[in-house]
Amino acid sequence: MIRNTLSLSMLMISFVGCGDVADELVGKLNGAANPQSQKFLGCPAGTFAYDGWSGEYPTPIVQVNKTITVDALTNICEKKPTLKCTVKPGLYNPWSEISKADFKTVGGVRRFMTLKKVEFFDATVPEGTEVIEQFYMAEGMCGLVINGQSAEGYCPSNGDEKGSFKPLPNASPDFVNQQYLGIDCTEGHKGWIHITDAFMNLPNVQEGEILGYGSVGPSLLPNGERSPLDVWANRRSSSSYDLGISENEGPFWTISISAGGSESGSKRKVDELRQKGFPAHMAWLGGYGSAKNKRMWFVYVGPFSYSDRMLVEEQLFQVKSQVNKKSYAVTLGRAGQREQIK
Image (cartoon, rainbow, N blue to C red; front, side, top):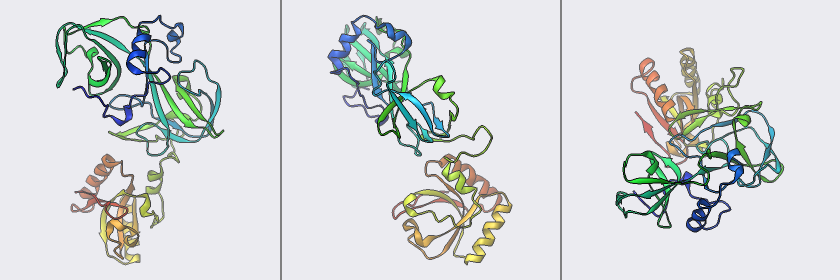
């Protein structure tokens, strides 16, 4: 399918430093290859810069465990770093809810000529039309330029339409996609960090984990301890009875065990659950609009981040099997933020 406006928010086109997309890109493609392209630096001829890290599951998940200072660029098309950038501990990925950052990719484009009339679902492209494949999005879809128009559609490079496309020469045929992480450095300026194997192998940098589609989290530290970045996991392991989580941090998931008991009775129930190995806690529902501010104690297993639905479903299965088959997961937060998993 071809659309004039890209619908994937993480891949909104940003043709960095190269002027008008259609005219300037075609001009670059027809130019001589930049020798620096073999080193995968900057934005040489035949490449395209865009927002986001593409793919169904964007990687890497950059986990910075302690403050580091690295070389950085003022923009991703520079050919060598000009800044020092101090990066705070965080989890950096387009799916991360822990740390804020920007993400860009520079990738080599591919050019094709249609050998016959080609149907792109709701559009027909005649024979002899140049189709420029700028970047991969997800699920076999690419960002394209057709007849000077930015569009999205199936990727000609997939090879699914045999005999429909003829590859054309590219200015930087061997260019490998390069990813950049945009950070507000503690020095007070914005820095773009080139994500390479060397960067990922720095002390205090490691890969985080994919928790499920659209959800990432920190992995265990090299010494096997839980990362301080994993706020919700650290809360689940807390020995406190009432964690005092504000409704403003919601919605977050809990697995309901009981409600309406006395404070002392609720504490005994929490202790019983902990003896069975469950991360149990209690909360005063009067502080949560999603629970209609009911003035009662609530015993639950959790808490879990709102994005950790897969983990919640796994824990709910265990609770139903070992504690109460009628248990269900419910969110706590502000008014209107109540959801359930049964």
